[in-house]
Length: 616
Ligand SMILES: [Zn+2]
Image (tube, rainbow, N blue to C red; front, side, top):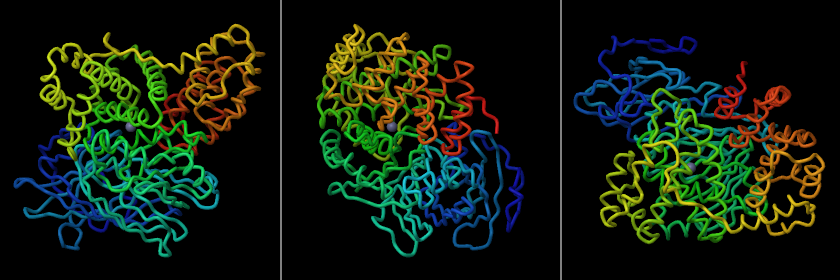
């Protein structure tokens, strides 16, 4: 047992050794034993200290325990515990540390009295808490004030607050958050729409959520309403651009409700973060966190908002029981996302996204050729960081399965099934096995022969892509293909018919470039279409990747700038991976990463560190 000695421990009564407690409960990624003692409600009272880059205060948990339970287990990682109290008693109470694990963190054990209902933990985060990214003012768009945002999925919540960090455990919360007076705080809860003079903000989330959906952002942020229940938050200099891009949010919300039932979270807002946000978006309830790299200027990348919004049903309402069932969150969400996109922008637009998704999936399948089990929908991430399972398998193979079911039984039947699935499992968790029973009973049993045609168990438990995977066709990409062939036959870029192309068509075009393209032709493409200097992050990344493959060095200076500014992991990994293939590329990667690393969030740093074998 280790206490954090450097911290002032007011009271340190170490318990007698805690024998006979299983190290891990049902969720292999949490120390919690919910069958014995489980959290139900949180009151968080915290102070955000930009000087020390810490968050300190108390997490007061209302708990429910079995009669025989003698203690409660919390997940923590890199958190300093000041003291613990129980019930109404203000005196410090005893606590102990159980197992410690490099991935899972440290099991915090608090003994309970027979009638204990409240446990309060006074704590402080560490300046390098993985959930928190502290940006200095230079790393923001406005460059005036620093910024903090959190990212808790998958198991980083335990670095932000002591919690039972399993997607299977839900709680409601209220929070009082103190921040510097010139900033505003926002959470995955009912949010303020303007700054106040005190720097004190109160939050309430009345629906029970799992810990990975806790979220906090603090900075110079303003709000603009978009529709009755929708709006956007961003740094002042990004606000107008963001509101323009997300103009369809209200319609998205209404169309989503038409598909799968009422939105149960009150408001739906989006917060556009600084560029170092490691993901495209994070479905924090009531307030999606989003990367600014989707601000393409032509609204062509707003499917990301459809995706995060769809999580308000698949994920936030019906939640994967643990990270091995991640496909239940993401596969369903991608399917739902594309249905929203189709309802707003047409089938031809949604088809392009499905096509690009399938391309991604095929790439991922190739990557995992030597570890095929990683390509099953149901994962076995025990002993691994669940982050390892967050690739396009869960998303795109999951989507392809739902598309196959749609094609087998028809859209009307699938829609009715999904609506019922979300309704009857609302605010509950789902394992893959429970889902298989549910779909058999509520769908396949009504369509003789459908189960055999779909063969769902092969999709779920076998690696790779089953033979019955639907073929995805995109008419708009057929058009791209004909233009591309003309270019291949020597037509110069300015004579190609590209006037109405959106991001997706450009991506499809760039991805088609053959291994051999002369320097002259690369230069021509770049000078006509301005790929190297484009403000569209998706197009830029695709072009930089081709530039690396073709040694098109004039693009490197733009790529360097891009990699230093943008921290979205999806863009970073392919570029660094490509650079690592050659000696010169390795040197370039090292040079760029040295400068870029401080701008990246923990999850992006972790991935690139591993790739580059980076030692601090
Ligand atoms: Zn998602």
